[in-house]
Amino acid sequence: MAINQLQSSPSPVLDRANSRPDGVLAALARSGLVGISAALVLLVIVMALIAPYFWSINNLVEVVRQVAAIAILAAGGTFVILTSGIDLSVGSALGVTAMVAIVMADTDAPWFIAVILALLAGAVMGAINGVFIARFALPAFIVTLAALTYLRGFVYVGTGGTTLVPDNVPFSWIGQGQLLGIPIAAWILIGVYVLGWFLLERTVFGRQVYAIGGNAEAARLSGIPVRRIIFIVYVISGLCAGIAGLIVSARLESAVPDLGSGYELNAIAAIVLGGTSLMGGRGSLIGTLIGALFIAVLSNGMTLLNVQSFYQQIIMGAVILLAVFVDRLRRGASLA
Image (cartoon, rainbow, N blue to C red; front, side, top):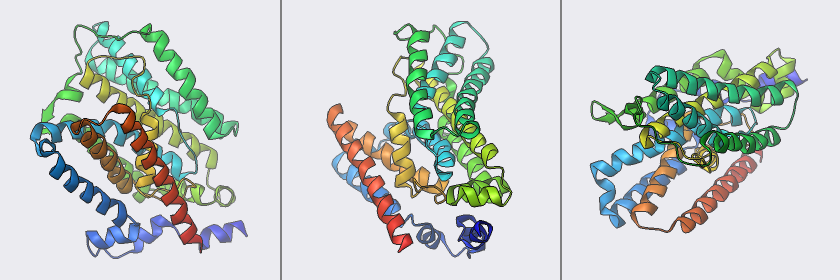
C-alpha cells in the first residue's frame, strides 16, 4: 500500500522533468515562485526610490557579498528541509568554521590549509548532527538546537571571548576579491547553487530526497536508504556552513565570538519564502535563492535607511512569521 502510494503520488522532480520548457514565466508559475519573485522586484523598486544609494555599484557589490553567506547556508538547509528535517545549528557552525580559518591564518598556514580545515570542520559538524538524527532517530529540532548551543560555546572558548584579528589573512580574496568585475563570493554562490540544483533535479539522490520528505516510511519500503540520505543532507548542510564561514571570515579578516548568530533564522526564512515546505517533499533551490535575495535586499535597504537594529529584528521576525504562515496556507490549499 505504502509503495503504491509513493509511486502514484505526484513528484516535484517528475513534474518538472516532464513539463514543457515554455519560458521563464511559465516555469515560475509551475513552481509557485511568481509571488516571491514579484515581491522581490517590488522591494527592489521601492528601495531604489526611497534609498537612491541603493543602485550604486559599491552597494550592489556589498549586497552580493552579504547575500552569499545566507544564500549558501540556505542552500544546505534546503536539502535538510526537503527531507522534513531542520538544521538550527548552521549559524554557530559558521562561527566555528570562521574561527578555524582565522586561527590557521594566525599560524601562517598556507591559505589552502585554512580552507580545507574550515570545510572539513563544517562537514564534521554536519555529520555529528546526521549521526544523532539518522542513526539514533533523535528529533532534528532538539539535536540541532543543542548543536547551536554547544558549537557557540566552542567559538567562545576558541576565541577566548575576544575578536581574533591575525596580521595576515591569505585567503581574504575569497571574501574581498573580484573576478571579471564580479565578487569571488558570487562565483562561489553560483557554483554551490549549480551543483546543488544538479544534485536535486538530475540525480537519483535528489529524487530520493524529495521522496523521503513526501513520505519517509513509503520511501523506506520502496528500498530507499532513508538513514543514509538523511545523514548525507546534514553533511551537505554542514559543508555549506563551512563555505559560508570562509566567505564571512575572509570578508571581515577576523573572527568574533558571536559571528553567524541569527544567520540560521535568516536562512530558514529564505528557504520558506522561496516556497520550500517545512513539512518536506516540496521546494527548489531556485526558490531558496530568490528568498535569500529578498532577505538581503530588505536588510540592506533598512541599513541604508538607518533603521535601528532592534526595529530590523522586529521586521525580520515578522517576515519569518509571514513566511511560515504562507507555507501553511500553501499546504492547506494543496490538500484541499
